[in-house]
Image 1 (tube, rainbow, N blue to C red):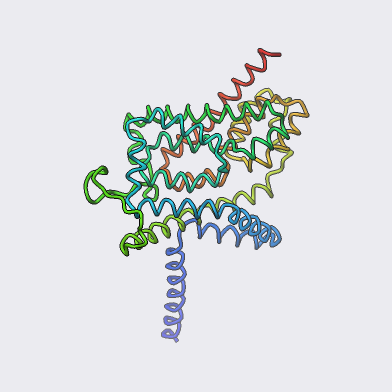
Image 2 (cartoon, rainbow, N blue to C red):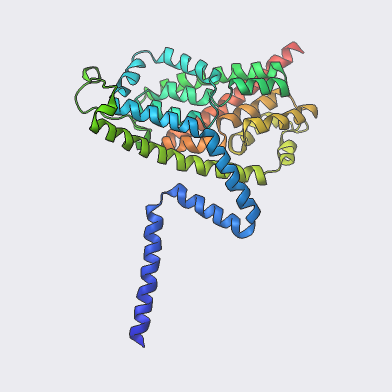
Length: 355
């Protein structure tokens, strides 16, 4: 009898050990995705289905950007051209930051589509300052967003938002450059975003071999890099989209409107505080801000909310978290908050002068 109980207990232990080892093999975002979906399904099966549909549609929309960026990054590493990309930014960070800010504000990348590109730039050895400038400026504005903002909120606010995107990129880049010279940002990237180390001497002595498909070792390196980067970014972006689906479902727009309405004297700083952690997406924000403006909210408050939320939308913020260590991620959030607040106050002062 005791022998059969012991055997049964050992069997149960083996089962639990097997489950534990299986979960351990899965990475953190996969476990969290399964846990969230399981919890939602237990209480609201319809919402679980809606979240899955939302996540899949979002993934399909970003898939071309993800594949292209992963292929480019893996190709640069396999061919040795990543050293050339990094060398292009050496010795002239002031110009690189300006170019990154302008290109970021005018490029057609959404807040999620920019992340794989950022990962590729970091992996190629591009300095943190211009990359962070691009990361801040890019999600704020793109050609499609400019058209929709002008149509929904007016041409003036669309132009002001574009200027603010460029200025926030410049502010971020040059401040990061100063901070990096103190050594504070040394080793601030996670392993997935670090550049490939050269094995044959200085970068200028390395030969670039573009026809990597003719070299078995380089092709193996290419597929290894592509698989690692694609899986790493893909699982975290999936988790981010899942969280976004829940925010869309459970954060009422009326609550945001009450906080940011004209009756609140602290609306502008609150727009920054609310916008940084709780933003949904740029396109959905346009009708919300339009309604608040119709109720008498200052355009400066609307601008602050749009800027803070654009930079730190849930998918973008989580994706940046996967690339940067906590101190660099905190700096990224700090630039989003400070830049959006300064832009809002500047616009408020300008409105006061012309009124």
